Length: 437
Image (cartoon, rainbow, N blue to C red; front, side, top):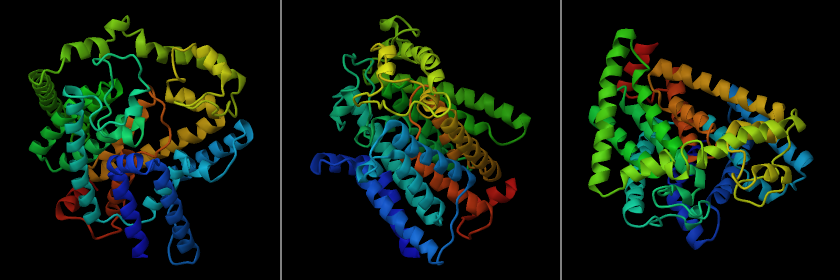
């Protein structure tokens, strides 16, 4: 039914504008935006399943989604039988895993039209522009400018040079700033690079450089640099070599321009580099935040052998009172958690849960790579290159994030159009697909 499709479109647009809806729901309703959205997602998912059962629709479950579903089921079983959690309504609407699985099921079982994709691109540009403006204001005027105050409570005692800035994204969730902005940038670049729209491409890299630096998140900075590799994914060896030379020069220009603009705005560039990136005031890269990552490996090596197959269970959640006393004792106050996503995955869910998640990641990247290679649209693929990378430095395993979900939306569009399952592609896109077929 077209009605369900438009409802799902509406959910995706609300999610895409999540920082603004989350601000409203937090300030005026005193409700968590993601929880409210999850309730709507479950309702629509139920209707969609009933539509399929009655025979008026077909079901599409890609291989990656099957393994993600099995992993999500395993987390639920772990919570029930290992952690001993009560499975009630609150459990479901507060579960990022279940909400993301339901939303991905909906995305895979609707048609993404060219008109909807173009609408999303316009919203991307709007969100990216506002996010850039806000983070500049947070650096120059007040770090609390349109920021969720609770975000800064996670980083007590930090100087202005070290303090990470969330822009508009902390209203949704603290980790969102690490993923969503660059994900939107990646999807826009994936649209513009094949069309050789040099002005838009340069502007996006320039904006991204400013945002990444002002965020003071090292994972964001590294992921931003990874986006330059998107330019080298097509062409022969000679053409790729020429692109490397050209984009090395462009990267230099973007870097110099970013530093020049920030210094002209009186941003303490040198202090941020020394105190946040190089952590000189904390004793260098082997200390400070880096020390918590190193500590994670020692703690993991100590505790993982005690529950290797099925895992210890997620007794410990960042930002909440921990029920994992062994883990807290070994962390000795130097870290809030095992600060490497894949180590946390294996510690919580063991080899069984880890294997399911790694199979999901493998089939997802394989599918995304094959579609990108055929269509020359590398945006969704690089979103997940970045996502898989940040879990070496952060802990965020579910897919309930604005940028991640939108990557699936665009991948859905590219995949179905490359398979010739729709006639909704514009001439430029058709030429790209045919040229790479």
